[in-house]
Length: 463
Image 1 (cartoon, rainbow, N blue to C red):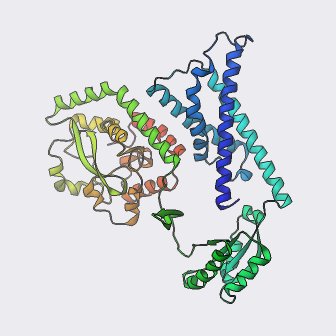
Image 2 (image 1 turned 135 degrees about the vertical axis):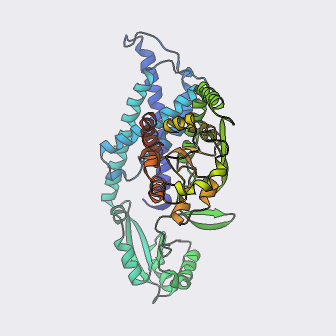
Image 3 (image 1 turned 90 degrees about the vertical axis):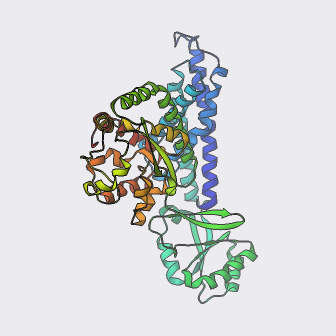
């Protein structure tokens, strides 16, 4: 399955899984509700209408969360254990959304037994659906029902390289009925081949020097009403992933070197703001206590504000508990020789500007707490590359250093859990940020958040 057909198939499977989740939840509640009469449970629970709000979370977000874990990718090449693990990680994200919804909207979840029963039923139904889908797919492959006839057009060398790059799935799903050498054969030859083979698409391969010939043959496809697919791999990119979008009414080929707008990023934003708001409310007493201690122990404001580079370098005002003397910024140039980091970022474990309480706040990362407000406002994320001051961003020398600005900055990141101040090479810091950007997923965020906890509690790498 390739192109639009694959996209439609994915959407169909997500709708089916959403319905299975709804059925699993109804079945779990019914079993728990009727279980009192059957003497399976000691107490009776509220009727289903008291639990219906959960469907508004499970049905839309369930399929999205498991898709974010790669559940729908390459089903025929997955083991049962991998599918189960992807479902489990997706369920964890859904659980966080349910917890946030329950807290903010003050919705009750009276029976604890309903959710474990639902998880068991849902996993069974979705995994069974996946096995049935895989079995049906393999059966259709064997009968040839999925093999799509196409025509390949381009130079002999390009067509040869293109065919040898077919994946195992493409070999099973595509039948090249004829090859058209655009350097020797005219558009009329292509039209004759279209009439002979009755194909639904022609795939064109070639480099930029053949665009004139390619355009002529693509125009022939347009007249015949046959889809023309142009391979654009002559535009070489090492990192960026190609995609299509529209600029007004003009089609655009887009190369993205960072995660694009998606439901997964939307869920990341919801989780960020939800956790930030809960943390601000629960830790408000700690905010006040720290602010009071700072005011008592050193003159100046309790909150430090600084302009930092956000997504794409856009400036925003970061909030931190003040850990330095009030004129610290004016002393910056004088202390440049004490920088222990290579590159534009300044770091020194002998910085004389740090106050006594400031050293403790940095060691425990408590000075970062006000950034939860930045997360709630949407300037930052819980996980992402650490934002640097604007004057340090202006010193970036390489494109790799700039690319770390392609995602929203965060409170914690791979650098944070890999040693923090013990990493003195700015290039290593940048490499960790780019590793995060290139491999981003909601599950990676969750793992970084959990690994941040012991780092903060034991002050590893903090100075």
